[in-house]
Every structure is written in structure tokens, then in C-alpha cells.
Amino acid sequence: MLPLCQDPIASRCRPASSDKTGSVGLMEHMTKSAIRRASQIEVNPQAKRNLQELFVNFTLILICLLLIYIIVLLSS
Image (tube, rainbow, N blue to C red; front, side, top):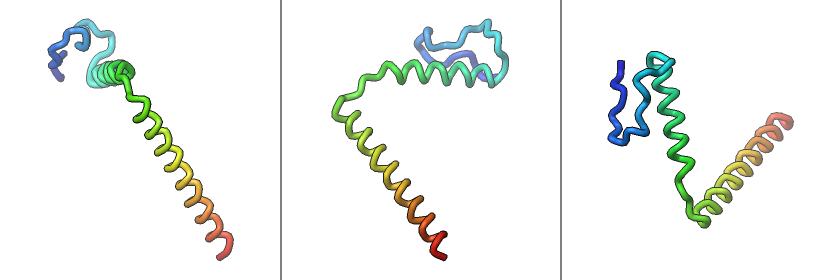
């Protein structure tokens, strides 16, 4: 079994009396802890806008590729 905690900050450690046992409980705890830490990160508004535009562009490219694929299938 993995050690209870290697993180020096005690609040991020999983409790010793966890009701879930094994690696599943540890993975669930690590995932919740990572989400909690990530949700507290402040993002620059310009960087946030750039990421949103990048996501929109990526989605539009995927839609266009899908349409091209459908047209090629229908024409053959």
C-alpha cells in the first residue's frame, strides 16, 4: 500500500481513518485534492480569452473535417 501522505502540507493528506481502502480510495482522494487546488488558481483574463478562442477554433476545425469526411463518403 502507498504511504498515507508525502505532501508536507497536512491539509492535503488523506486521513488515516479513511472509510475507503486500497488504491481506489487513494486515487479518489488525490483526484478531489487536485481539483480543489486547480479550482483555486487565478487565470489572467487575457489568457482565459485566448484559451476560449483556441477551443472554439479547434472545435470549428473538427466540425469542418467531419463535414469534409461526410461529403467524401457521399460522393463516392
